[in-house]
Length: 457
Image (tube, rainbow, N blue to C red; front, side, top):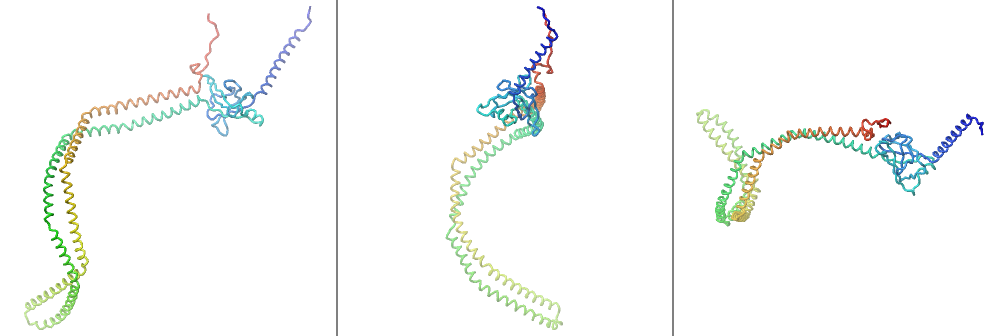
């Protein structure tokens, strides 16, 4: 059978049918996707390193959507925002937890959803009803947190090493000075060993001297006791009574002293008027005695003046004595009272002295005095042994400290420098790994290696 169909028409029809089929399939798939996907916004406080357009959104390891946009929050730059499209049937509730993770070791980041209470309302349905975008907070990547923590630890370690280096530099001088002081102290102990021996010997001599003095003290106390006993207390009381009677009589005679003082004052006044009249008389006598020899007259006048001066002095002394006695009557009474109190205190003191002497005698007679000196001698011997021990070992101690201050400090500085270089290398490696994690798989500078497809025979 011969066909008359045009091949061009048949081919064109076939191509149109195929294109129509592909268009229908694409249209149906687009409608299905638009109907089953819903927007979801992630708030990421901190670093969102690795997230980009096309990053996967997983729920318990199952891909449910992808990231469409990653940007910073304009109102708070410390928070990153990632907008994604996810399957609207995904059970995302308020208790669902979101974390930023790494897909293996390729460095590609994704958002992992897990958990959630099915009884709670679905955030996607609630947002669709309210015509808003569902939002959820996602925790930063654990690797990013680890890198930030490592960075902070390295920074702190660097600062600690700097402080340690400064401490070693500052402590070198005091350590050397301390070693010198110890050496000076031990040398002083070694030089004064003979002095310590002499001191111990003097302490022994002192104990012997105290023993001899205690024997003499017994005889002295016995003599003092005999002297106190020999004093007649009745005679002391009689003396006090006599003093009391004298003061009473003196007090009674104070009025008479006042009368005497008044008489003396009148006598002085009379002598004053008498001297005035005598001056007048002498003026007259001068005229009479002009013919008398001047030497005789001068001698007589001087004698008279001396006599009048002596009389004035005597009257002044009498007045002063009477005034003093009249003003000190209270002091005289107080003197008598204090004398009585002194006698009573002497009696009480004699009793207390007897008790004290008895206690001292008992202490010296017991074995405590000898044990006290024995303990002091043992203590001083122990001090001497300590000084000898230090003097014997000071050379080793000084050599060790000198070695540490010289070679040990240099080794410490070298250790600090090596540690700082190691930390710098670790920090550089961590930074390079953070910038390009693919180097762990591909090696080298991180670029993908290419291989030819030729088959070797």
